[in-house]
Structure formats: structure tokens, C-alpha cells
Length: 266
Image (cartoon, rainbow, N blue to C red; front, side):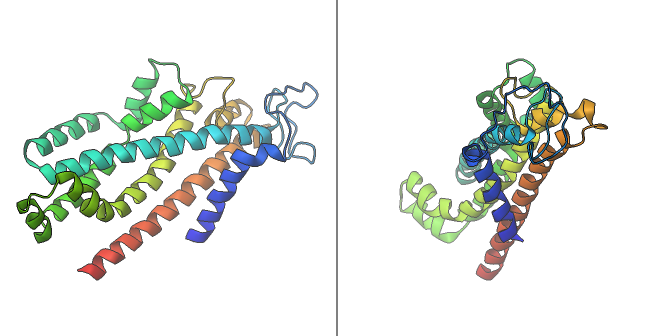
């Protein structure tokens, strides 16, 4: 299953970032003679209500969705890694401040917090990356903090502290390798979550603003013609499903490997 998921992800990334090299149809071209045309040899995935080619738009929109997903997950995971490992290592007042900060963010449901933030700014890929990152680091941070507590209690860490070894050296040399599996699991989960968040915002009209497009905006554009032109919403929805499903499978596999390694060490 992980091999199939990796193949799907690689295929989607290649299509999104290099598909325009072999499919030269303009994603923005309007054609009044090809409105809501079903999938055919001329238009592989059909057209929308303005006559624009769906496949070309999926290629163009995929770049934005994947950049937002990967960028948001990377930044959120880095924030979670830094805050979680710092709280778990230093403990005391730093850990108490961390708990207060996490509780403050978790007071509001993540998606409603996203809605509140996006409603005050003009959404773009960069803005969505920042906003999704700000609202998505808490789970990673809590997992990292919990694991850091266990690492800090190890005898060799205490010996290193007594020997007055540099704290930065301890964090990078001894904590980082042990926390890496959790980071990668959180990152893969985060990519799927960020893509779904962006798609949800775009579906509600609060995401990417035209003329930019994403899978979410393409999906949203087909909701009014669902009954007569299913392909407009189906194919962007399929892309979102394939990416998130594959990422969840890979995350579960990485988590299984991590748990198996922990059992063997014990």
C-alpha cells in the first residue's frame, strides 16, 4: 500500500508541475463553443461553464494546492518541533508557557479560526500558507513535547547536562534523530490537512482569489452545475482525495515503523 500511495503522489506531482509541458491547452482560455462539454478526446476531462479545459485547470490549480499543502505543513511542523522540543527539554516555566499557548489556540476550533483570519485579508497562496501554519502547529508540538519528556528523563541526557554540554548540541545531536520520525509523520499528515483546509476555504469562497486557481476553487466552480456537469467538481475532488488518502497511508506506515522501532528498543 505505501508503494501505491508513493506512486500516486509522485504521479500527481509530475502532472501538476510538468503536465503543461505535454498538455499545452491554456487553462484560462474561454471557449463559448465548448461550454460544459463532457470528457472527450478534445477535452480529456471536459470543460466548465465558461468553456475552460478542466484538465488544464487541474494542472495549474494543482501547483497552488500542493505548494500550499507542503509549505504549510513544513512551517507548521518546524514550529511544532521547535516549541515542543524546547518545552520538553527546559520544562519549568517554559513548559507552563507552552501549555498556556497551546490551550489558547485550541480554545477555538481550527477551521473556524482559519475562517476568522482569512475573512480579514485577501487570500493568496503565501497568505494561506502563513495562516494555515499558524493554526496547524499545535498537534505536532504536543507530540514532540511528550516525546521530549521521555528523552529528557534518560540517564545519558542527565549525564550530558551534568557535564555542561551545550544545550544546542544536545538538542541537535541527541534529540533531533529521535524526534525525526514523529516530525515526518506529522508533516505527512499536515500536508493532507492543509490541502483540505485550503480546499474548504476555497469552496466557501474565502480561499484563492481569481485569476489564481486551486483544486478547491475548481471544485467550488462546479457546485452550481453538479446535476448537469458532474465532471467539473468530480475531477478536482478526485485529486484532493487521492493526495490526502495517499498521505494518510504513508503517515500510517511511518507511524507503524516508528512504533515497531520503539517496541524493539524496549
